[in-house]
Structures are given as C-alpha cells and as structure tokens.
Amino acid sequence: MLTAKNHFGETVYIGDLIKKEGVQQLKGNHYFCPQCEGKVIVKLGVQRISHFAHVHLSPQCVEYDRESAYHMQAKMQLYEWLESECSKVDLEVFLPDIIQRPDLMFTYLGNTYCVEYQCSPISEEIFQKRTNGYLSKGLIPLWILGANKLHRKQTNVITLPKFQSLFIKRNHTGAWYLSSYCPSIKSFITITNLHPLSPHTMQCDYEIIPQSQLHLPQWLNPIFQNTFYVANWCKGIQHVKDTMIRYHTDKLFLQELYRNQLHLYLLPPYVGVPLRDNLLLETSPIIWQMYVLLDNIFSKKVGIILTKEDVYKRLEKRINRNHIKIRNHIKPSVNQLLALIREYLYLLTKCQVLKEIKPNVYRYENQMSFPFTISEASNFEKKFYNNLTSEKIVWY
Ligand SMILES: [Zn+2]
Image (tube, rainbow, N blue to C red; front, side, top):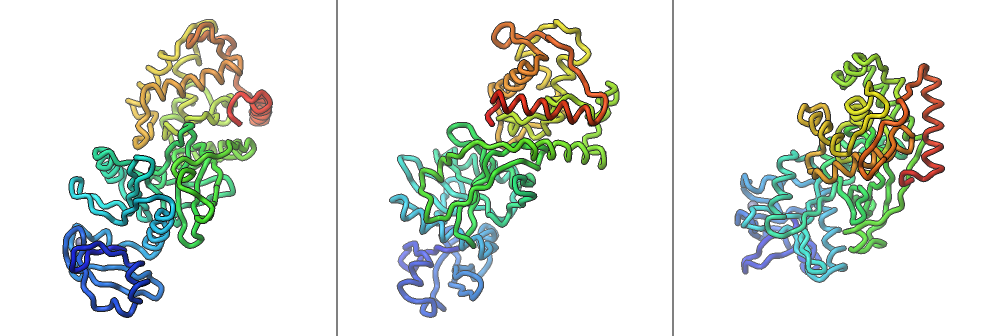
C-alpha cells in the first residue's frame, strides 16, 4: 500500500512523506490502514519500493500486502502522472458501499474513473463483480494490464490467455485495443488492431508511448491507425489449422467437416477472414464462419433466399449448443452480433457467393467452390486477399 491514515485521521501518501521527512525518519512510526483500520508500518526496501504493510495481516487486506514492487511502482508513477493531468486524483481510496479499493480514482470532464492496475491474474467472476461494483456507483472502471503480463509471440502476434483477454475493450470509433503500463520503461503500451486467430492468439500492433509524451485524453480514448498484415494473417490461419489437426482440438468441428466430406486444409479462402468485430466471439473465425456456411448455404440449392435474421437464429443455436462461444466479458448484444453477421454476408456478396437482393435479404448466387489440392487452396487464398486489399473491401 502506498497510502495510510496518520494519527489525525489524515490520508498520507508515502511519496510525500519521504520527500518531507526522509526515509529513515519514518521507521517506527505507526499509521493505520484506511480499510480495516489495523496498524501499518513503513517498510523500506532496497529493491522493493517503500510502502505501508500491516503489522497483523487482516483477511480483507491480504491483496494489498501481496502487491509486487512492480505493481506499486506502476501505481506510484501513474498517480504522479495523473496529478499533473487532472485536478482530483485519489490513491487507494476505500469505497465502503461496494467494499472496493481501486488503485487510483480521478475525475475528468465530469466523469469519475477508477483505475484497476492488475499484475496478478484474477478470475472473470471477480473482474465482472468489480466492474459491476463501479458501474453501480456511476464510476467508470479502467482496467490496465501490468505489462509484465504481456506475452509477445512474434512481431505482430500476441497470446492473450483468458485473464489478459479480459482487458480488451473498444475506443469511441469501435476499434479494439488493450491498455497496459510498464513502470520499468515508464511507458504506456497499447495493443491495437487486435484480430483473433484463435481464442487466445491474435494479430496485433504494439504502440509504446513514454509517460511524458502521453496526455489523459489520448489515454482514455486512444486513436490509432488501422493496419493489417495479409501474409502474417494467412500464416497465422494456417498455424491454427495445423494445431487443430495435430492436437485434435475442436473435435466436434472437425467431425462435422468429415461428415460433410470436407477437409480443413481444403476450405474456401473466405473461411477464417478477419472481420472488424470477430472479437465478439471467442471461437476462431475459421470455425464460426464455416458453421455459418454449413448452416445456411452449403448443400442448399443455388437460388435459395436467406435473411440476416435467419443466419443469426442459426448462429444463436450454435451458441446455445456451445459450438460457438461468445466473449462473456464483452457481452455482445443481439445488434452487435447481427452487425457481425452482416459484415460476413457482405464479404460473401463480394466473393459472388451471395447477392443482396434487398437490404439484408440475400440470394445464394454461385455454388461455393472448394479447392481440390493444397496448392489450389493456396492460390485461391492469394487471389482472394489480393482482391480484398485492392478493392479495399474491408478496413485495411
Ligand atoms: Zn487493512
């Protein structure tokens, strides 16, 4: 903990105390925990950052005594940065109504934000509970991931296990990103242009901005350029397919392909495409997009008519049967899922598989064609992405 109450009941910040009295003077002084009111003392560390620690551990405050030096250092840096960016910042303030204690709380342009800087994994339940706690008080939660929890796989690929993926959110233009901070290099690290290949592996960009060069409005609403790396994406999709075959993951899906006399390596190139809102679903785009094709047009006669709502109903069935999973913490609404379907159907019209005959009403126009060999599949894919990028059909 970086704050405590003194004998007068005033909240004191360790950074200020050290500046005023010097580290050695603080030894032996008693302070009190703002939450459990138990005694706390100043701990001075050579490697560890100076902080308050409980004399007797209290069950409700265990989390604070376990905070790593990395966590405390980040919290201290963010506190001092926020103080220069806005007028009212509180550190580790205890909110008794919801029994929560955000790392930082600040008010900006009439909104009050609660920063949860998280370095140690927490469950989705706790994440949701805390998020809902803040929202119930009209406070805006800001979840920031400790940069020591980022696992960069390759230049433009990241692995985001369940805990890390909870931090994914959107900016005001609807673009997906993840906010992170590294105290060691005193910089904000934003993961942008996130395109999921599988539940936890995503294509992305990294934006590293030193604290001294970033201001609050950009932090609250980062703006970034859209980028997309075709060759990287195709390699990623191939890797996901290889993994499915090698490790027999997603058995249900593979079995369904075999029942339909299809092979994972011989699917059309419009299976597994990066749509803007693929992140609403946890299931790989290879799987859910193929399910959409299987449920709506594959083995149907050319000429049949389908609507966006028909496709949604069939997708919903797959979700209920757990064949397709949504990202729970994002809680996609029906309208958001309909928009995702529309995006996919639009792409299928561009591939001349479907034709939109009225708004949101489609006719199955040209039979889906499947490659016969792996080299043919690869040629189809090349042609497909060339057309997409030259026509600027999607955002890249
Ligand atoms: Zn306490």
